[in-house]
Image (cartoon, rainbow, N blue to C red; front, side):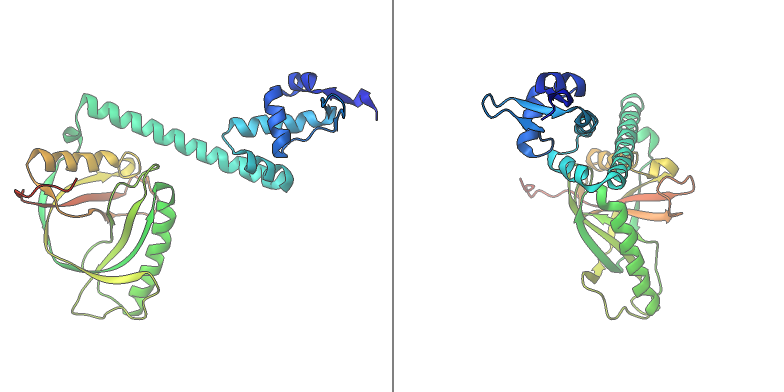
Length: 285
């Protein structure tokens, strides 16, 4: 064996920027295996041309990619590695944008208060028959679900054809963000006196919503996109609590005007929360 082409683990650590402990760990995991292990001392030696691979591993781990995924990417080839890095970049940019928007939203609330930027009104919501497609998910899967759900809903509606009685809306049965999953329902209201949907695909249902009182506010443009839209939800929730009402059902996001692009300036959505008069019954804990 030509030892001149080999670096002992200490020198390889210095050349690659990976600690000796990390190199031993990656050896055990099969991510970066030394070229030679001394049978007497157990000392590890790496080829000099393994340094670029070690630096790639270091960069991937700095990006938060799990060790098992690093091993898979190294064995998959350059094209898949490039695609994974591009996806990682898009995810990092999205996280940064979410953090930036969250900071601006919090600063606005601290300096102005949610009520200063979102005026809350009350309206009466009529009883509705709705076509529904639901799924349990977090915010990362929300856009993709809504696109596919409404494609299916409008396809079924077109076979009727159904007569719509109002704009499409979403019902959130809990918190839907990057840390929490909840049941999300894409809804299309239609006239019960006209054509009715038939041959519904699995997971799609027809439901009756009763007449209800709604506390509402609107958001437009970038304010209608996540995470800035959370300020509208907070404003309505604060108003409901401050005026002594109870939360009487899943909150709705109503598409008053929608271009198909989440942060388009012409978008206008309404946050509408069903409310009821307070009761003397204790709340569930």
